Length: 184
Ligand SMILES: [Mg+2]
Image (cartoon, rainbow, N blue to C red; front, top):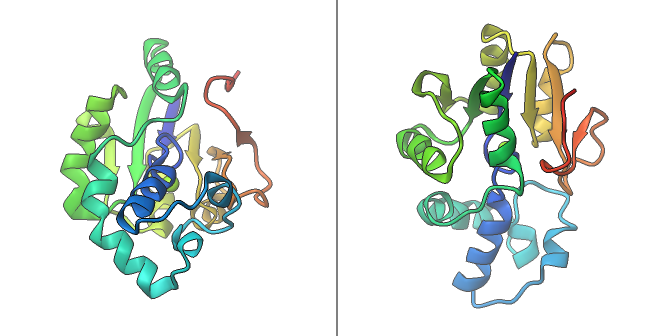
């Protein structure tokens, strides 16, 4: 089978990692309970910033957010390596900005995910993911972002949402915990 995965907040806990960085940079101590109640993919609201301020903060910290010690979700690395060991094909489809793509691929490899260079797709817009998913004829695809998932309703690929506070309203099969998840 052919499995496709988004990376940020599907396989790795990027927003929470960024949340800790924001607290540190802003000299704040906003609690994780605030993080867990956010209804937006963006995290700036928790720090009293508007969209513009939040966007600037995110962009200025991208390097640190992407390439330091962001953890994978529990069980994610094991799940993907298990799929590979069973002979399945694994693809990554991330809309991280183009200039960060080569380093992202290496970073994901170093974290322990099984990555084949030619199976790593990066730098597209959210709404362009569907074209790659169709072209690759994926059997399964996993993402966290409502704006992406909403484009994937009418394709043969079986789509799963990685559970997050901002996607509770999406009514498709859900991955709550990679440790407990099984496709079969
Ligand atoms: Mg994502």
